[in-house]
Length: 68
Image (cartoon, rainbow, N blue to C red; front, side, top):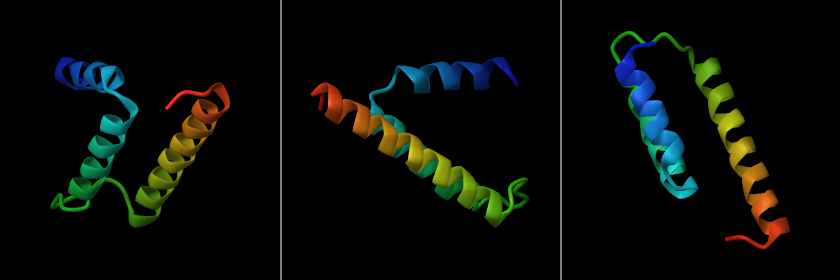
């Protein structure tokens, strides 16, 4: 991974959960527009499913701890 990509990930980690969600959604949309995508549709669906499960778990955790 390049230093630029690592910096992007570090910046992503510093974002609020809602901003992370918005960014990931946009990145997934753009990834299917690439002329030669490395990921198949099945892989993209799997990644999206994992993302939404992680977000659901985070929301559940927030709800249980009383955070918004």
